[in-house]
Amino acid sequence: MKKRILSLLVVNSSGVLSRVSGMFSRRGYNIDSLTVGVTEDPKYSRMTVVVSGDDRTLDQIEKQLYKLEDVLQVTELEDGVSVCRELVLIRVKADKTEKQQIIAVAHEFRANIVDVAKESLMIELTGNMNKVNAFLSLLDGFEVMAVVRTGVTGLMRGNYSEE
View 1 (cartoon, rainbow, N blue to C red):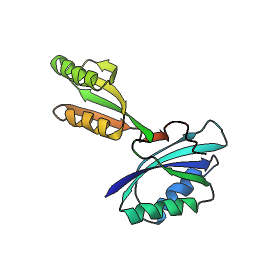
View 2: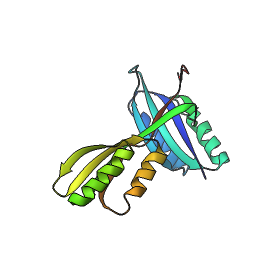
View 3: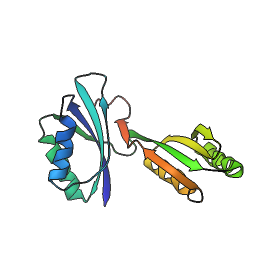
């Protein structure tokens, strides 16, 4: 199964998120990640959607998105020509010794310690999905109390205009 990261330029109107997500559910497609926010022009929003499937399914998803009235543009964010990031917050249970080990790992990943409590740490990490997943796998030996991920967001590199 392949993953595709799609950047959708949509009209910033009431119900647009429902209409886009509804298209996925009606056709039985799963959304792996979804982020949305207003653009530099408040008339438009940008959605970043991560989807999985075979080539035929992924092509069909793009075609179906273009059929939606509120969707103005669909752009695939490919490796090398785009920058994609995700934010993750992780709360880890840790005693004094474990805190030092966790801080050392976090430092290697350029993560930030954003909260320190008597028996836990909260770590903030920003990076691509591979970096976030690698960091989480290194925490396997510790008791992870909570993880929250924002989902992927991204833009094309350079002077490329997505509008």
